[in-house]
Every structure is written in structure tokens, then in C-alpha cells.
Length: 158
Image 1 (spheres, one colour):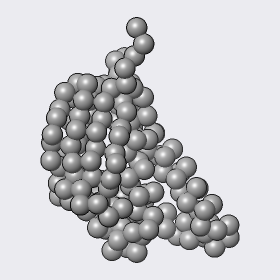
Image 2 (spheres, rainbow, N blue to C red):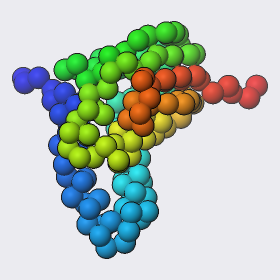
Image 3 (cartoon, rainbow, N blue to C red):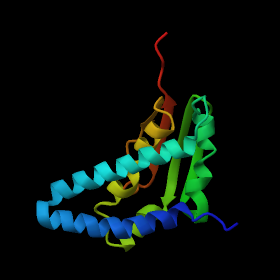
Image 4 (spheres, rainbow, N blue to C red):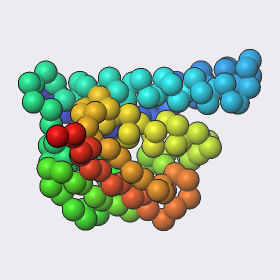
């Protein structure tokens, strides 16, 4: 069996296709509509991916399970992750290098890279486990020196 395609390469292929679609929508309906359509499409895709990753188990995965998935996104040196805290209830890390951002800029997509990649993160959680909440205040894609990922399990009413 062959090795799976690294996520970085999947996103590069998707971006090339989505760029053409984005450009057509922008030409016909304007930038605001093009961004809205791209956001909705990528969000739907990320939710579906989260559900697929989660699988059909009876129990929803926690943040320890989610942390086990980080190598999927690190493959091929795509991300440099600085782990700060890892537990079933809380997961904090920083991304110190993001090749996703680099490839989007190389492709001339730096202005919509956040729509192609960063917006996927919270949506993926919805599909994976809707009780996971992501807080992020900055991204490399938007010019910060690192991305701050802070995940927690939403508290449940008793």
C-alpha cells in the first residue's frame, strides 16, 4: 500500500482549484461574495473531514485524542509545533512555522490563505467533536510571528 498524500500537498492541490473558482466568482459577483462562497465551502469541507477523522465510534474523542492527530498536519515538515499543554480537557500549542502559509503566498494566494487554511481549524473541531472549542488570537498567515492554538472542552451543564 502506498503512503498517504501529505496534508500540505492536498492543500496545495485544493488551493490551485479553489483559486480558479474564487477568481470567477470575484469577477462575476465581487470580492465579498467570492470570499463568502470560499468560506462556506471550506467550512463545510472541514466539518466533513472532522467527522471522517472521528469515525463512527460511540464515544466522542477528547483533546488527548485530537493531539494524537497533530502529526497528520506536521507531515513533510508542514508545521513546527511547540506543545505547551496536553490533556483530555485542554490542548495548547503554538505553530512556529507554517508551510501552508508559505505555499499560499508562493501561489499568489496570501490574501485568501486564511480562508483556505486557518478557517478550517475551528470547523474541523465541529465535525470531530462539537464540544471542542478553539481560541486563536493570531496567525502566521495574517502576519504574526506564530499561531496560538488554545483548545478546551466546553463545560457541560450539570
